[in-house]
Length: 179
Length: 318
Image (cartoon, rainbow over all chains, first blue to last red):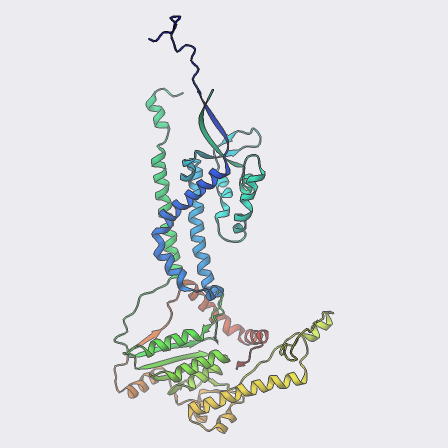
């Protein structure tokens, strides 16, 4: 045992930092980075295996045949395929785990806000669908890609428009040292 | 209340295995979706071995146009499709003859002419087999072949041109709608349906149609080795039944598919006739569009065609 000059245990009066837990709205930058990681995962795991199929569909037309209805139908179906995969990815992960793999990197969680008691709760399935519906690449949902993220900067909870509608919020949770 | 540490660990699901499970589910779903996509869009792309085939069958169905006017429910054949097949037949050494199975009311001027020129350039024996209808631009294409066969009751001929359209000028006046004519070049809005046609404009339009008609007649007379005057007498736009067409020299033979095979056997000096159809692999949507197009065509042909022509103000061989 270490003693000080007064023969008291030397560590009695030492102040050491305490562990504090921060839980609050997630930073938009972290959310953007998490989303980017998720897109990379979707591309590498779910789309690259089907690259052969996609390349057989896409080069069937050139710039001028884009106006050809048949080729447009093919592009729309391809876009729907990719959009469906993305929607399912985000929906299933957020419903079962409250996080996508990208969000796990940054300790971000998706939770539901109940208006009455403001308690953070697990998401319902419809909430996950609504908050991710902008991923469907057809009109009118595709318009939300532009409008939806703007609301993050005008909201104290950093919520997108669809998050406000679905009553969900992305929070980050991390512990830090503090005196 | 959690009793032991082990029970606590059991209650907390292993996140890693959860992630793996979700990835597997998503992969299976995307695999199924990709399968549906390939069935819907790609159709059959298997290359058939045609080295033992000596006759190519190319269908000229529906209205012949330059660009496909396809929707979910209708389809039209483009002249480029036919040109591609003719080129493929020309470049296939085993193919010695090409049969054009025609069931078309005609098409636009340039699209029809492109098909005619391609048939003339072909280095193979060509036969036109007219089924239900082979008129106007479709007949023009048939005339370019070496031999025309049709049924006794096929509809053939209709050597003529029209550029008719509906004049909405009066209707606009009734509803107090004004057409503000701002043009540079006196005849820039020639053929617009928004105003009544002037006499001089009508003369110009008629002159263009007469030129196209004259070209049509000359080409058919050259193809069929008939005198210009003889073809001109038939080129009133009237269509003929197969029996009449045989009498006036517009077709060579009355018959069916067997007649085609018989002719080819004689011409190619072989009894071993192996036919292969040159066609684009059809996707699900193209099959659906083709089925609907056939129904729509027979029900609404007259109204639909005249509306389409008037809207575009494009002279048509009809």
